[in-house]
Length: 172
Image (cartoon, rainbow, N blue to C red; front, side):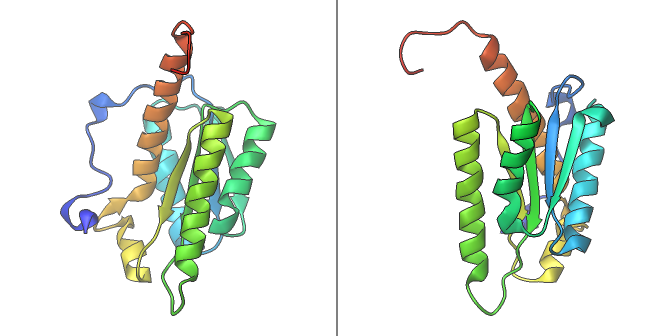
């Protein structure tokens, strides 16, 4: 397991671009709220740490993880954002519901990212049990919300850099 080898909150802070001029959306699931809100706090704090302005962070809560893509789409329809971070947690249960939900959310966020040109970050925990989720939401493996924030900043900066380049002929 990759997390067992690494604290999710550890990264080279000097390699992260400034988020000072970025407009960032965060969509957070209310389901498993003790976990998702801990992820949200880690995410929000990391954004502020890297220069994001409070007034430029737009948060939307949705009922569950399955609703994250719809929430991302709603935020993008209301705001011109540089990136959207989607935070959720689907704990494996006695059925395969988690596999269906996780796949649908991943596909939905990928589609929205590609169609809108705005990176939508998959900040969803997919643990086998609640303890694994707690370990990744501020516990012994750090906070995956921090990882989602760092990914969002890097992708928004990448998007900004590619938009400044002169258009080329052809597909790429």
